[in-house]
Image 1 (spheres, each protein chain N blue to C red):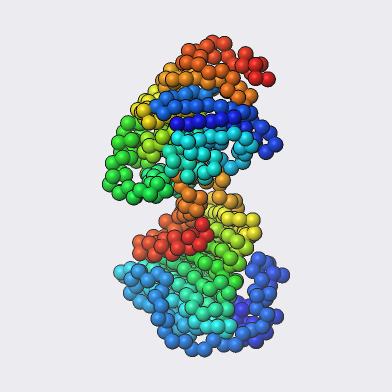
Image 2: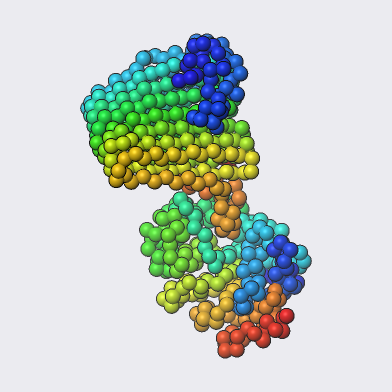
Amino acid sequence: MLSIENLHVSIGDKEIIKGLSLQVPAGEVHAVMGPNGAGKSTLSYTLAGRAGYEVTEGMATLDGEDLLALEPNERAAKGVFLSFQYPLEIPGVPTLTFIRAALNAQRKARGEGEVSAPAFLKLAREAAGKLKIDFDMLKRPLNVGFSGGEKKRMEILQMAMLSPRLLILDETDSGLDIDALRIVSEGVNAMRSPDRSMLVITHYQRLLDYIKPDRVHVLASGRIVASGGPELALELEAKGYDQYAKAAA
Amino acid sequence: MSLMQAIKARDASLLPSRRDEAWRYSDLRAAIREIPGASPEASRPTGPPPLVDVEADHEILVLNGRAEAKGFLAVAGAPITLRLRIVSDAEHTLHQSALTLDLEPGADLTLIETYEGQGSAYVSGFSLAISLGAGARLERIVLVDEPADAISISRSEIELQPGARLAQTVVCSGARLQRHETEVRHPGGGADVRLDGLYLLDGKRHADLTTVLAHTAPDGTTRQLTKGLAKDQARGVFQGRILVEEGADRTDARMGHHALLLNDGAEIDAKPELEIYADEVSCAHGNTVGSLDDAALFYMRSRGLPEAEARALLMQAFVGEVVDRIEHDGARAAVQAWVARRLEALA
């Protein structure tokens, strides 16, 4: 499914990702953990196609297709979804209007017809119900005046409605209290399926109590420096990142 | 109006220029080197008016400066809708006219005022004197849609009596030089004024929305919101002046102007002014000029929206606030449709 080979990424003159390789097979959930400044957000923005993140070497493919050559919206239509660490506020655009426009744009790019208004509303009601989001909130401009937890729930709502193949969760646990963390994690877990891959990027082990990874990778100084099973996350929690930061330096 | 004097004297040097403070950003003298000849009589326009869907009880047509009527009197009673069409169908010539509009005490009028340019490179001048009796209500929706090479100056003077309500929305396309000026005498005494504006500019279009509002007595409210978008080498001008005269205590006035530059070559000049000589007033103004938020655009694109669509959605949301304040349902829908068409050109 997702294959990253020897990826090098610079922002301006500064190289942040320095030869990162990672394979996430279909149906698996992989966690990428690392200290601040390791390149975690750079990795997620690069995969989503943000301007200013220059790939100088290496490749990233989704089911064999070169992701890096595509525009951000084309990647989305191929099934890439990045849940932002800090979701943006979109003033004046009601949440439902936004999601519907995004869904229809993706469908159009794939040569599919638009989703009808009743079908869309049904989809929205179901998804909102599962995430315990008050439906009236979806009539408000996206994320404007929403709390941190509400914004994260909106990310998961969009994820559920857009039904991507590759989910990238960038520090989804940040700013969440225990209740919100549980609701958001349940939303993510409900999306686990044999044809969907997830990359869970996090600083803390806490999120992985709720979203159980198949593999855990340690990212330090722009490279994967260790990989292992879920037990690796517990070890990191106990011992910290210091050993890896030194190993990478 | 100096334009009128200059026309009468056929002397372009009498036109206001950037040396006149009020015309600093809209140099009329530079735009009109010589006073052009008078526009010919034109036949009635065959094309539909831009706000075609709005039903009106009365219509006044002003065609190349020839008005069907000298004015209009709105009597008290049931709400009335008046369509005022100022049509220019001329090439390289000049026309101008003036009209009066009176609202009896208690009258309720919706004025749908459209500037429709069908020719090219004309100079159009229009002035409107409006008076609102006590308790009268006027909603004035102005749509200025003119060719890119036209010059168009419109000026209105509005006088209100206590308890009256004025709600105005001016929406304009810009032109070579397009200025819409409103001067309001606000009597306080519970009178309420809303003065909104919207300019959507591309190419080399220039639009100037100028308002001067004077609170002359206590207990008046004013709400003003102007927004604009400028693309290419377009230039948007907002000059808003609120004067709270001595004795106009407990005045409550807010003014906002917010504009987006869609690329580097565009320009916005804003001059918001609050001048206060009274006590216990509540006045505020806000003025921002920025660009579309790149982070928001990336966020939207990451969800699948193509760039042009994401930009259009952000622009629509930005200007929607002004359009949504139009109270007349039919006019609001018509303006929404017009704005949507303009935004396609700006996306």
